[in-house]
Image (cartoon, rainbow, N blue to C red; front, side, top):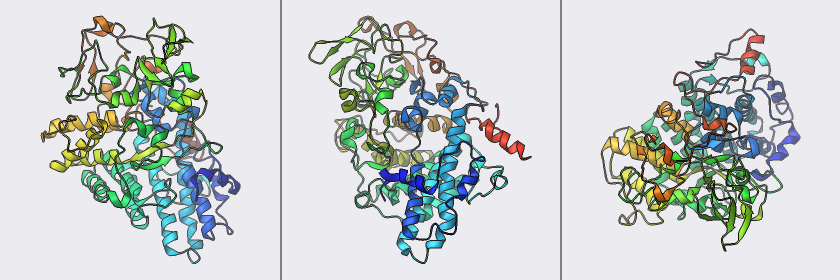
Length: 576
């Protein structure tokens, strides 16, 4: 089975849906007496289920990246998934079409897995038991993957675990989130037993490690800390069998050179001539043919610690005159900062820099990364380096086939550490897990504690704050932040803030922002030191958060209306 050929599924009648309910009839097409009768057909149906995990939005950018930039404090978005942009500015509504698309896409994937799981018994006598169980396990994983996103975005959701053949069958009430979560965790426990550590020659397929990883992630999100730690530990204890290890170069992991890294546990695949994306067009330099519609904020930049392991407000080695020096290496590995060399040029976003320079000093032309020249230039003066492919920018190419990482080993180490901390079970293994991630950022071994700021404290409160900062910088622009600030109940604090940009006059800069225990970066009293882009064409930069409403997304109005037409009720989330 080759994921890159998933579009072949179209021949058996699967199609994307506009609405969960209105499209249900089409789900009966492959569920007939002549399908699911042999291994080839089971694999074809499984391919379709895999394809449903390629969740993209405008510019074919993964939904996860749009979540981080449109709906959290990490970034600003302009023109990538209107619903998530609206979520960030507090104007989201049940009638936002993008919410319906996202919601429906998850249920389309669930419908494909349900069709396979319910009907594959037809082939049980002709498919080897091991193969049969592996196909079932992968389908269970994919269904759990979709329900994880549904429950984290919407809370209680209709829970369908069978083929729905009529609209009436599909119009069931929303199920309590805990019930859904418990069910999918049980499915994942079953799936883990059937899958191998590796698939030879097919690294894109779901493995035992990916199943344990999703189990750990869902458990952490829902406060099942013992389960989260246990699943992560199974992976950590079997690194060699799984073939997992941290990639030695953090920045390289998110470039073409990191595509085959042993840190990667699960991908959203892209390949030229099959399905491409536009990571670099979305996030890259406008001087290199991109549009920079998803960019990091100043508060994201200021969240990276200094090389002494302290936040910038507490570090003696931080200076606003040289704000990018003496910083955690992940800052420059993740973000293109002013005066960085990038794609053969010197990136500069200052309003006075109306021309851009090549690395050799030559003038390249008008500087479209400067909003004096081009108003849509990077809102805060920075660009994401993560998943912005330098080779693509050099060639001024309008597509990428760079795989998006859905799961990687560093996340497992952080899940293990957080789960143990939250469970009050702090030991040396917690510190080792965190320090392995931190040491890798500096390109050294965890034992070289003089070469990176190793964590030594065992104080539970300090460690809780440390692990939250660590997740913020390690996993930035990968799609975790929205769920983190919601489950930590800090969204109401970190979201409704003014979005500031870069320091414009570093020579005379003296102010240092303050960072509290929840990671809120405050510029009170030193606001004038920072750029403030007030362009009305960036509505996503005006952040609003209503704690009585915004911890959940609105149920799409079209779904509510469809239920009503059949005399049923689909309960809306509070505040909508």
